Image (cartoon, rainbow, N blue to C red):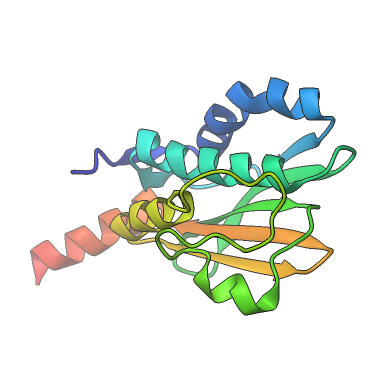
Length: 168
């Protein structure tokens, strides 16, 4: 079961990025974070969502060449009070014909140099985000990098929904 509690988006990002800073430094890949001020807390199981961000950051680091940049951001999403997180890299991108399959279990984009792993990371990430009532998706242009988007509901929005369920 999820241990979902209100948590600041900036803390979720910092907790994922800080342990990986030295790996980025070692490879010569810059890591930037950008969180808008006054963001609402999201309702999240910090460990599980941390696993999602760690997976996205590990992938971004693996596929971004030295001299590249990985950015992690959080901004308000739409009107329902959700928060949109994004992990963007300057790697080779994902070929269009494979983009629809990256969240499938055991799927790995063919022909990636030095790629390891069972192809479970993104499938597990999707399960975790789905369990939170959130969404995960990817946009990518070959040769221009990838952007993985994770939307999580704000704690206040979830509370409002729970309250209306009780009253009706």
